[in-house]
Length: 306
Ligand code: SF4
Image (cartoon, rainbow, N blue to C red; front, side):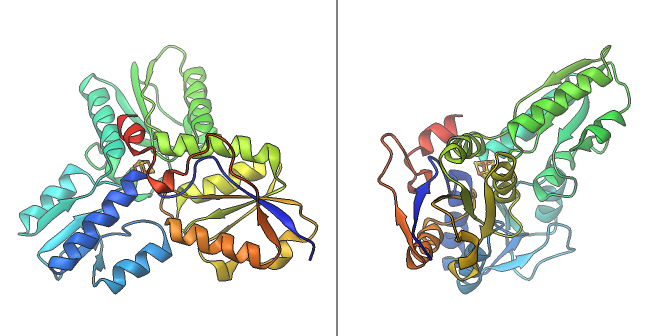
């Protein structure tokens, strides 16, 4: 096949929240037996690494775990769940990302202020379960149809899952205001900065490339959001977790390929996939001035502060 150019997105890959959670479990697993309550990150490559370290995987909803030490993942959990595990005699290490905590705090403040709580997010996703777990009356919506079905309340408080595209969240908040014009709708933007940066970088990337390859886990919500966004912007797009999943025929006739990665993807995984692209005819474009890979942690301070 003829060659193609490879362009990296302006921001991609593992965010500080996931990286810190992975580091905490690596450190713990090196000292004692540990059970992670759920998928530490939605990325097969990272999960394999945790398994090799001896970290066991359990479930937040399970009646118990085989180790005293248990870990709440970066996606967070309700206070009720954390208290239940501590009450059973487990030592709970909480690796909830500070930006997920921010969403929990925002929702709690809205409820304390008398709002009916609404979460824009994927029903059943572990982060969303954690958000609504302490507020049984909270409603979860992700489409205009679901917004239409929301009952009237004089005050409605809205937050979102941290990894939702901000355009979708704002569109649903606008739909809610149209649905109940007489209600006071208070919206707290809890989409995290790393997600926003990766989505914005995708806007810029899709102007310059024909095909976008997203490196990320099959269960990674934000990786699929990147695929969907690239397609909406007119690019062909696919997701892979490992180099062996790359299909050469995807790139026939393609002159420019953009590469990005979800917030749970290791730098090494991105490099391996780019290496595979080079084997089948890809050439990296020169670095664009001012570009920073967040994989390298160069913007961690900004992300925490965001
Ligand atoms: S995607 Fe955002 S909220 Fe989730 S762990 Fe990363 S920084 Fe935190």
